[in-house]
Length: 248
Image (cartoon, rainbow, N blue to C red):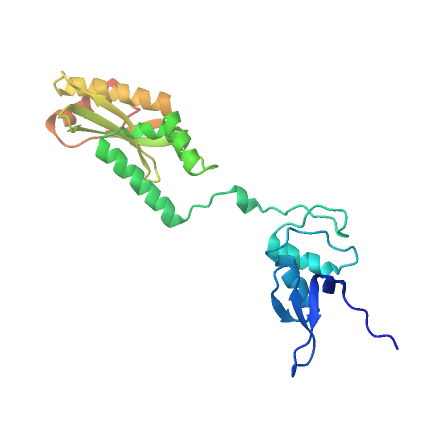
């Protein structure tokens, strides 16, 4: 009775026995490494042997060798000797999206804020096209909401506050607050050379209202200031200037 046919992988190994040990041992003809003569073990070693440069594999060699070679060496060489057609790599949508966790977003926002505060950079700088390009390079696909998009068609409260910047220049900051409590700096006005009289401040407030409604397409319904005497008189003058429209 004929014995079982010897696997073709043995052509790459020397077959020998060891006294006192049952079964066959094998020695790789390329790297001379010795191992047990188990067919799967021989195929695994042959597919990853460091001494060979992917020689031609026999057509009748088990497809299992191809699978093991793929797992150990990467893609299977494109050759007609393989029965299986190489499948295209399946991609995942996650490969095209850079995810930002909540904690990462908070850190990024904090660092941008630190830069703006430390350099006395106007807040509107974040809407500069070059700054937007920077953010898109850091997080491709991310779009920043603009003040205009958020304030558009909203009814807002305008607040004016005078202060001095790091250069001791007198400025008046104008900010708009929505009914949801969102606040945006809409304008900073350099008031150098002007006394903060109620008349000047009323004119400045009227211009700020017009500017806010035109630039951000929102509706200003009231103006808020501190209780300084010139501000209090400014509010009264403003109500006379724009009656039945602005609450102060």
